[in-house]
Length: 405
Ligand code: HSE
Image 1 (cartoon, rainbow, N blue to C red):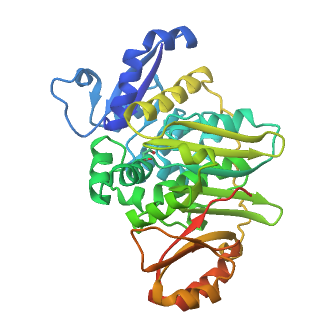
Image 2: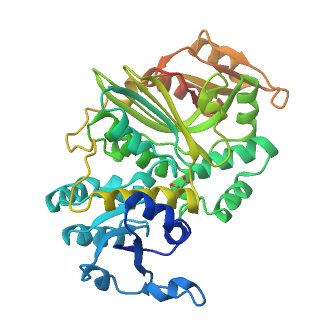
Image 3: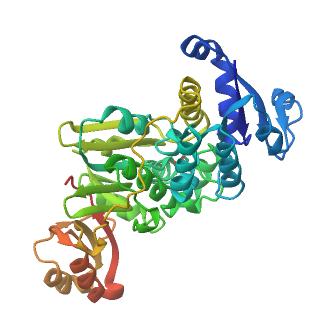
């Protein structure tokens, strides 16, 4: 029997508890041993819930129990979650987590401790919800050079954009629904401002390219400025607006960004809707691969944490190999990145816009008869910024257009 402890009985923690009570037989048949949830740590009480039998309020009990060999940290945040993770690893316990903020902030230190102690720090659930993308990058593409990762990595914002585009829900209504479904972070600013996707693309890119990408070096824009009119324009252009976490690795260095993009209907990512996540990976031998699945919510996330727990149980007292490295990536200046841009301007600025952005392909929608909107040819970000600043308040909105490298 392998004893585990779950830190946090919130959305994901209660999901992990449920996975092992519902699927204990199948897990035992695959592992050859039973996984026993010996403790669940939470400050709250849950009267009437069977978890009461194993509920503790003091982390020290878990830390001091040598029978607990694996800890699931599903508390979130970078405060107590960091302290508890560090202490658990130092005590020789493997830690499995869904906490992307903690992995992005302290992953380097925590991975180092895990290695020194001969245990594992696993975080499959930190990116892509239930999609086994980290395992694929670590274990399946071992003979490939990956040069692009482009993903819809945040279920909340994908759900919101879908609701806003499909049935005209307002931003606030769509966010409330996403929160009610358990998709959003405790502070949904992390979702709508792109911070959550930023941490995820930094983690995935670090593993994909074998070079450490600091999330603070990833320029990040959220979806708060996206309007229903932008969506109508996208539709007229045969595209949808998606919040993408995107990175590319070339001889010049690594480019990474989180921002809303127009994604053309010819791209697989176009059809990733609702709360689903989709991650496109390009390898020099592999070509294209696409990973798709439930990107947020209790059970998909719990499924990924639980799979890591089983993996840690299969490799007790061993550090499971990953592509994680401390060697810093050389980041390309974001001003040098080249994109096509979708631009909306007030009609009065039409002539000036045509002069600044020659060769743009015009888009019109009946809802905005007094605007000029177009997609520019491929431009350097720096040149685009200089040109758009000349339009001042006459620029209504700007969204990049996704194109594969
Ligand atoms: N808030 C996150 C999302 C949860 O919406 O994707 C899963 O990481």
